[in-house]
Image (cartoon, rainbow, N blue to C red):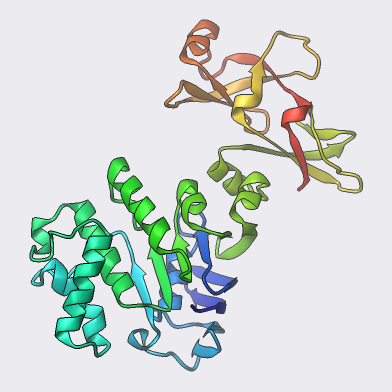
Length: 343
């Protein structure tokens, strides 16, 4: 198992990524952030595919990247698995999986035996002789996982490996990865909070090329420091002036639990499902305007003008109240459901 200590600084015209990261031996860290934040570049730098402008990368006690030195990717003991399995089309599934051990010097017969074992582990015991063109997308991704892990990498790098899969296949691959990543050092890039919760011990959030929040997955998702993290967690995060027992934004006072004494600004964090549409003049309520309505599996999410607060409603309530863009509504949220954090 390998520990990672890195500060990755990659700069080019119109782009600047400067992010520190440490990953303990046997731990999985998820890298999350909006598109264009630099997540894949970060992973490519760890793999040795992108040179550093500044900083350094250390795997265990071995320095593998600096601005003046770059250890070849093949000598790092890392594997990078992305959305495309990138299987060798002319090789069978067994030979694809055996490629890593054979490249490391394992005798061909032994490497093929290892490949058969790994194919069985990923649920493809009978697919060894089939070529990638004869496999489904989900099966190809399973072969790619087997190939990656059969190489006994000291560091596993995953770049959104489930994005191109249908939900049922993705669930199966997610369970497979969760099982086989136990005890391995891994850095995972994902847009999906489900993946972070399923795989990762910690999460690092990268926005505009900078680290904006880091910590245990549930701690970060439960106390989002930015609007982006709040959106990942499916939460409202409303920033305003700190007031006695709450946060004041656009004339509304949102009360909650937390200590904001001494803080000029605070953030109120709460679930859209905890917001209620109430009658005018109700205690602790505020009036606002509907900006847009977004369909959800269970009904609809109504986005409002005050602090961008979202409200989850049923389809019946949506129709009964006529909640279209421009509609005036009065909202309320129980203070017991609101967490107050320094902004």
